Amino acid sequence: MLVEISALSKRYDSTLALNNLSLTLQSGRVIGLLGPNGSGKTTLIKVLLGLLRQYEGSVKILGEPLSDKTKAHISYLPDKNHIPLHWSIGYACGFFADFFDDFSLDKAHALLKQLKLDQSKKVKTLSKGNREKLSLALMLARQARLYIFDEPIAGVDPVARDFVFKLILDNYNKDASILIATHLIYDVEKILDEAIFLANGSVLAHSSVAALTANVDSLETAFKQAFTKSATLESNPLESSLLDSTKGVL
Image 1 (cartoon, rainbow, N blue to C red):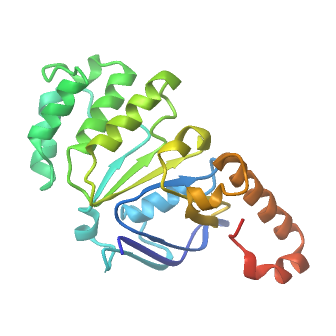
Image 2 (image 1 turned 90 degrees about the vertical axis):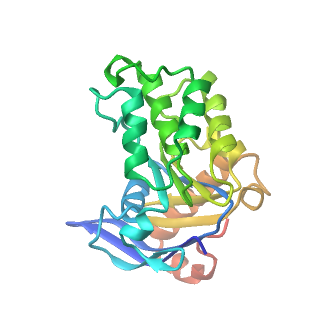
Image 3 (image 1 turned 60 degrees about the vertical axis):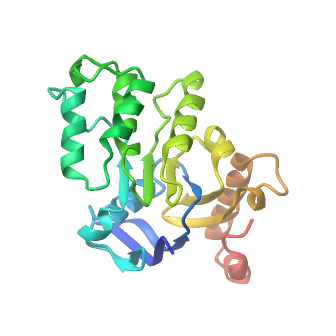
């Protein structure tokens, strides 16, 4: 199993960001981590990346508890530029090659050529869109086991979104899985194999897109139904108790 999460809870003071969350993720899948802002997506990602160490529950990657070794299996694209502005594109490639054992300079150069990014250019001279393309190229040049994207299309115009998705699907390690965290459910549905619905730090549903949309017209509709059902059960403890066995099932 690629990722195993059991009874994961994380609290920030009085706020419960993750609430007894359990998940398993297999290799070779494109998975949507879907939910509104504040649902716990970023907190879960930070746990997987080893950035948050104080939590309850168990998290394993490739059968091992989180550690520097497991972090090396993850390639992460944050929602904000993380490359120093004074670097050149070529220097960024060299830095990543030195820092990550699984980074392929040849693949990075091929991606930069495809994206029409000149390696001599400084990051500070790039447009916002080209900075995002550079970050994407550096991420995909790694042979990771789990690629995590945090809102990868939030700042991308609709015309460019299909290009971004095609670039991702054409270039990631096929033995790996992709985890896309976003609130833009409609836009990512067509590339997902499965989806995780997250709200208030809890998993509302986790299944294949085909199963989740079997009785509705879209994944977004399925999420809204699951969210409404969850809110109804939370407001009616008796009904919640009676229907507990169906929790997380649409």
